[in-house]
Amino acid sequence: MKALKLLPRLIALARRSPGWLTLLNFVMGRLIPFNRPHGFRIVEFAEDRVVTCASYRRANHNHIRGIHACAIATVAEFSAGLLLLSRLDPGRYRLIMSRIEVDYLYQAKKDITARTSLSDKELQDRIVGPLATAESQDIIMITEVSDSDGNMVARARTTWQIKRWDAVRTKVK
Image (cartoon, rainbow, N blue to C red; front, side, top):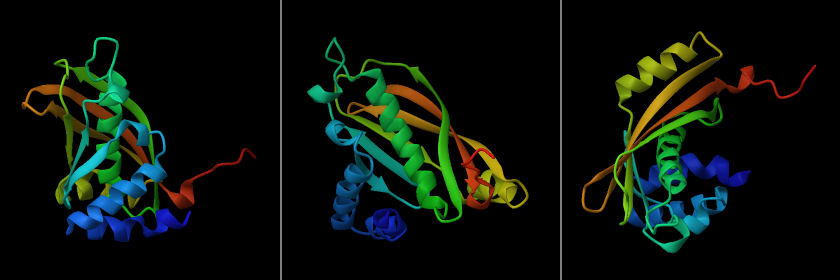
């Protein structure tokens, strides 16, 4: 897909410009159609950190008009996955989320923000270094989700399998 090949360049531009960040949000809504009706958006995109947001709106409500647990989990997954995608070459590595665990701490009745970070040292020690000798590596990313009042809503742990494309086997022999 052409958009996936252009994604690293678009991410680099979005880190420096609000206009490009707006375009990146538009593109992400097309690349991940499941997220589009929920209005998830990237609000900050630094080299070592991604901040995403989900609005307090009807599409994200549960039966008691709080933000649904699945919306909270998905915006956390989106934040962590996007950060990994931006730090690794998608032409060399395949990312698959293999597990998600969420501790729900507070009922969200306002907009929520998910924050994920990954330092250069963590990237080297936990991913790039091990992948020099292994076909795949699992990494657990921690994402903290808070509401617009600063209340900690949830803490998500997403486990990602990162695999070199040359080690990916898609056909049964």
